[in-house]
Image (cartoon, rainbow, N blue to C red):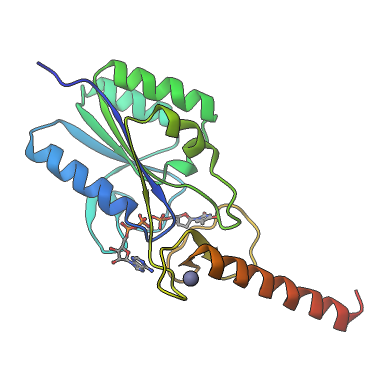
Length: 202
Ligand SMILES: Nc1ncnc2c1ncn2[C@@H]1O[C@H](COP(=O)(O)OP(=O)(O)O)[C@@H](O)[C@H]1O
Ligand SMILES: Cc1cn([C@H]2C[C@H](O)[C@@H](COP(=O)(O)O)O2)c(=O)[nH]c1=O
Ligand SMILES: [Zn+2]
């Protein structure tokens, strides 16, 4: 008998092991002879277009798609048993539409393994993750190691002052920090900004 579809969500900061977990789940499903495919958003140009690559260089063949409707169409057409979706926070779909798409996939007995950031560099929640968490069958919040003190990390600190929400990158642009180190960095940054404004007479 075919297994029921379910939703498995891996979330947390950058470097916390979300993609590694996605890789591991799909690897096991492949051994179990599931018909699978993995997807990544078109906007993600960090690595090879046809692969999802973890920070540890684990690789998964992947299909680049513009939005989650393309994932639904592909999975239906190819009668897949399970799909993996990386960087789900980048898909432009309305968060409520994502629920409908995921429910439709699960109604077709397709298991969905999702990896995505919980918060942006300003610690504002990513809407898609916020929306899908309650309907998940399995939900894991992962933690990297704080790059400053070694505690469990909580946030993805952006090293530059770029204010755009989407800024693709890795260690060149971000580091994981615990709550205390993150808040300290942000307050130091604010003080420096105010000091410069004072000196310039703004
Ligand atoms: N500060 C850090 N804390 C934990 N892992 C780190 C850190 N910096 C680099 N890494 C590496 O990142 C890997 C996790 O990568 P990945 O699964 O791609 O994470 P994510 O998808 O959450 O960004 C770890 O196994 C580790 O080798
Ligand atoms: C915090 C934050 C991150 N990003 C980008 C940076 C990376 O390209 C991805 C996250 O990748 P990972 O597999 O979780 O390490 O997201 C962004 O665009 N905006 C942000 O605020
Ligand atoms: Zn810390």
